[in-house]
Image (cartoon, rainbow, N blue to C red; front, side):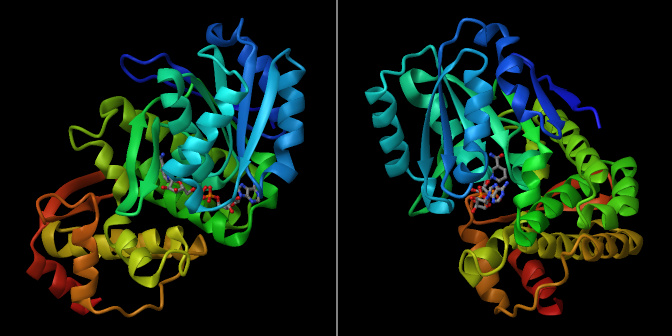
Length: 365
Ligand SMILES: NC(=O)c1ccc[n+]([C@@H]2O[C@H](COP(=O)([O-])OP(=O)(O)OC[C@H]3O[C@@H](n4cnc5c(N)ncnc54)[C@H](O)[C@@H]3O)[C@@H](O)[C@H]2O)c1
């Protein structure tokens, strides 16, 4: 299957390519050399984690050094804890020890954790060097590697420190997905479903037809799902790069309840994807109450999530506790909880919802 190319064109940014295909990491070095910004660049630092390093670091380094780059690497412990200022500082120090200057670039090889961390380090080391994203999870391919949000966590909350900094290039080699476990696969599927509902009838009905194939990891369906999600996300980011005019917030569909459930259950108990899927089901029903969301959408979305291996969660938290967790989320404004509500497929609205309404809906839930 030939590789697909999506060009991400964001106002006031250098356009960049997202390449999607099998075994394309082998030509990453040559592809980077074709970019003006990389033509004379000498040093690269590959940042990865200790799950991904034994699987893909050697081939990535070989591809890069084959194109004449001097390549160093650094591996962090896998997991969300790596997204911290302490780990970022260790990487800055290591970069300084390696005498990396402003003319180096950082290559993020891994899932969204490595992508966010390496993106943050790259955008701040010496006031910013080039960043290349090589996502290796489905979630990172369809969502986090594109759009330029980088960040680390504080004890007070997730992603509280970060930058907006677009990568120079994204290489989504779908062969790397063969080693991904079921739980991580489902996380990517939830973000794809989210994108489809928010985007359009075309994406939604395509995904409905392709859901079984995607759930069983058919390569053609996977690559098309990634390409469609990237096109969707690039379009959203082009309209609202820094999440300042309420458009980029559509990417939070399903996340208002999703984040609250993740937090209440304790991070890691349920996957992020399972919580987002639950949040989408809830938001669509809340939409029925508030914005006349049609029953057909609720049913079709339920069926889609089921087919993607994202069944209802068997959790029962007190409505008050869920509401409280939603209010502590950094996306809540002035104590008001915000939802992305689908009025229909491809038609959404951002709404501050009163506590009483949320509590009533949670009781029904
Ligand atoms: N920047 C954004 O726009 C954005 C968007 C969504 C999510 N995020 C962030 O992304 C992070 C979640 O990303 P994630 O779901 O990719 O998690 P992750 O990076 O923790 O990866 C999940 C697990 O899979 C392992 N892994 C990665 N690739 C693998 C492969 N090919 N084979 C086997 N194992 C592999 C990792 O080592 C890790 O253990 C969160 O921190 C979230 O905040 C950022």
